[in-house]
Image (tube, rainbow, N blue to C red; front, side, top):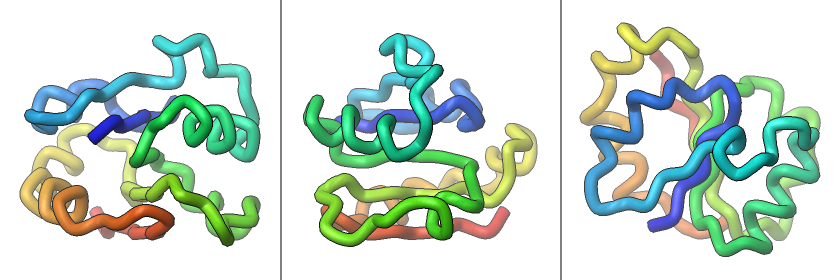
Length: 105
């Protein structure tokens, strides 16, 4: 699966997502895009999953009709996220195009 991390998603998480192609918005040169534009360009570029820590994304964006699945980590703390790696991997394994899933951390 092609996965894109937004700015707040801790980059070390990518090491634990074996079998997936993981890029960051920064690496792609997309760090200045607003969320709506970032989601659109990610979808156009063939990403299947967007992982973010932006808890307001649901309220700020119209997500209806998106093919891109969105996984929201409810913390930016890498030590706390590390404790939930199994839950994150399970969510990724089950997520479907257009899904919006939040993981409490």
